[in-house]
Image 1 (tube, rainbow, N blue to C red):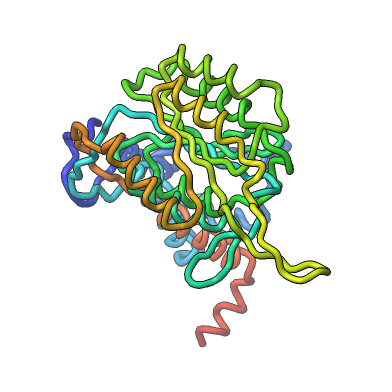
Image 2: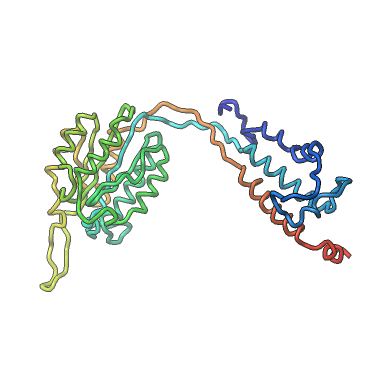
Length: 340
């Protein structure tokens, strides 16, 4: 059934399965009773208490009612009850956007501030980049995490909220302590190579230089340029940081290992831009610029959200089956005493 035919409210996806509701009654009336003797295929100790004798009546009306209701609930669950929501407009840009985030050991450097406290670089990236991802409604967004190796954490999806959540759950060192920039770009090229999107964008964020991996960054940039992948590179890390040692306090450059020349060349060869983020404000401004460079202007696709409800009757049928089993195992005399 097409979504355009669904009305708002309760709906059954497979209503024809409701025709199975009278099946037990039909079988009971049509099939002949089996004569005694022979090996039973299924032994049920309380079967005689459920089914009647020659008269065909039920000896336990309560048990029969519970079993019947459980069967009807199973049929209702099989018919797939649903709740159909209001029609919504989903913007679709035709753009695929991958975010590659460095989670190597150097991202643990605490040279940034967030909410008036000193934090490491990854904390700021999670906060700012997470907001950026959630704003990309209409893009298919994916997430690559890289350290010594590169991993696709989230495939391309319209579910930007989940992508942002998985970024927030990332931890330093999960992909190794070194930095494989070339492998991260190569993985992005591989994931986007056969994609039909009109715009394919990679935003690569790192705080160091390529120290690991099988593919060199500039070689990967050439691959990306041939495939039409635009790469925006972001260098993260402060220029000044005061540290304490045996001789007292001194000022160091915590971003001395940042290879800005390579990051700038990667961006230029793929038609992107290089950005430098020395603090949280810089990073937020960069993502605002990226929103302007890759605006979320799109066509509109009409969708109608559908929530499955089959688990409710299915769960209730299970509860009734347990009740039926307890009723069947309980001696009839005990029940009569309880009712007296």
